[in-house]
Image (cartoon, rainbow over all chains, first blue to last red; front, side, top):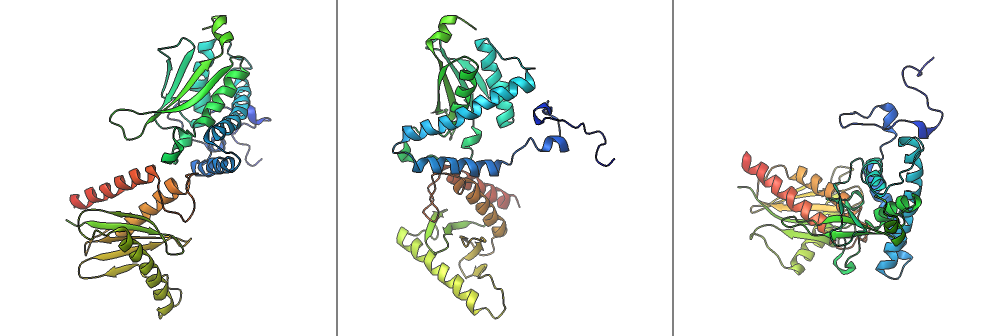
Length: 202
Length: 141
């Protein structure tokens, strides 16, 4: 038969293995896992522009982007637990955080997040930092929009993953200026709800 | 050393949407740069009409005693042109790079309104880098 060579046929798209390791060259079966950055950038740009027409102020816009991301996060958690974790879900705080930092980030952005740190001032705060967030690659925020950050979408994804895994949290995205660098870095601040901290999981 | 004097981007109706000058020569105030932009837009359109050959796409290079003007028009009618020292090489390539930066950092930016003046931090940063890189290449020859 034609085309049945070595390529294994998967009945379900979710069962398809993901590329692992750095040196992997995208093969035919993996090619479908990569999305054009341009296509994504235009779609995301449209998402922001559409939402901009629906709101009166900046914080409302941020909320809407976060909600859009939340739905992605909920789905991504479900998918990755099935595909990468053998239908197991992380139940420890640090476990789920490193799951977000590595597994989720790798699937969504093709790389592990630059860093995952614990907040110094508060026990219940964690931070995921990125030098240049993928969604922000082509976006310049106008000066009059103040602290607005398109990373609100990514913050929503993180919130979606955490909340659906049983760790309710408030997640926000911020610009943090870096000395000697023209562009600020992005920090996703995760503040867990009281009950998570009370459980003492971690 | 060959040098770039200034860079212009004009929208399809002839309005100046981006202007930047490099170095002291050929510096112009805002009104003059707007005037040059709309003049060039009209001249470009006229040249298209007057051309004896069919399918002419307008002036690509204007050579004067004191400067060269290289122009690149995208399919959508946005024009990019650079004014430089006579005999400067590789300007077509630079204009293509500028066009690429425009499509990336201006058109993919949700806060940019089409046909309006370009105020995008990332575009400025990357443009400066591209022009500097071009200078390094020119110096290295």
